[in-house]
Image (cartoon, rainbow over all chains, first blue to last red; front, top):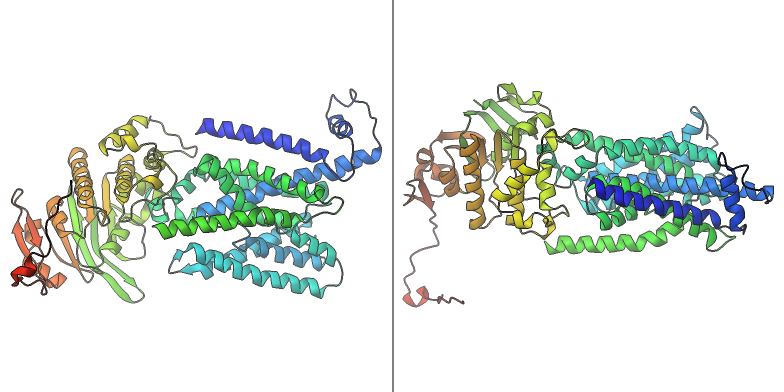
Length: 346
Length: 278
């Protein structure tokens, strides 16, 4: 187990570094590769004297203030959403669960949109306000979805997704209503709703980091427990798992990291659904491997999606949510179909 | 006494499911709980295994009230084999049996002792050696139930609870499963509490039977005392013929029904022709 984790983790990490290299080098400004890398390496201690500065100051601004923070943000957002998806799937024992299908993302979006639209960005807690409020509204909508889906103490796969869709549609309407009521910043909010990493700068990256750190520490420690959940909740209880506490902790932490990501980049669908399944296809169902690898491959996935979003039709930018949906929706359909066949075959 | 139940009652929405149940189980004993559908057998087992709470009365395990145990402490003591076998998931047989060690592992998933030998012995005992690297989703229901029993063995419990574990199994797997459990009981002085649907299996494999009806204990005693036509008819509403097992001397039942009269028409009698295809 540990050897496989080291193997795949190492491979994933190398792949992530390569993706960073490629992504940093691509962009609408058409900077030569040598300049891109000169600027980056120039920032490292010991190397600043070795490398000649033969580039314009504007190039340096583009790399350090635009592309680099954006790459980091993509990595963090991807890691957050994928890890949350793996957490939801594990604890609800539902292969179709992810922040988007469960209504958590739209719930968080309502809270965040409310603050942004009415100019309460930094009320009470400074830069932490939006993620915290998004967390609360996301958690509320998750509770509503689970309450709707609860039929005699059981959560059926289709019912959860159905309630998620209903709640998402309702919350989406609320956001649209709020947008229509305000006459300013409409463009910004619409773009945010479709999901975008554009022009976020370093401060947002730093806001996201502690949330991801909490998510990684807590959820990774639940790997073995989620494996037992796969046997069924009662089986897990008989093996010594505290079901209620596990469910509570995993749902709350997954919602927290979802809310943090959504409050900064908007609703980006299907990431939390696709990535854990791709990792599962490679390494199997063991959550001790699945959770850490999901973090790495989620980062790679969103980094590439964002690179496509900003380069494909350059200089026009495609919303990131559109790219992930185009990649993810067919995958969702495939999972739904496979699931139906499985339950039909039994 | 390893389990002591005192005036246990349980209600669901004003409807009484169990009323004033009292019994105790000695170490090394196999107690069978029998009774018709809706008699409260499953609820009783859920209460005894601690997954269902909020009852009146007392359940003491090893002289300590059950609600004072954490789930993990309970799992070191007792294992439960359920009616539905394990779901068809992608874990291998070996991995699932190792999951039985969960209550003994620290937060890194490590243990002080080497468990590989224990797992090997269990695979051997359950005849799962050849399947150890197969995924659960590629096994039959009977094989999965063998894995489930192996997993409870890995827990090394003092007390094993069975919740109608043979319901979905063919007769071959039924006997195999009950035999393994009986051997384990005798070897390790294991205590077994078993809810069983099948009265013949219950009579063969349990030392003592407890007959439940409408949430009350009708009788407890040896299989000979409980498997009696009058008692069974009173509780189940059908009167079977009770016979002695020709080899073991234990009571066995043979069912009787109203519509199965002796066939008088000799032509009809032989509608089914024996065909054995080699």
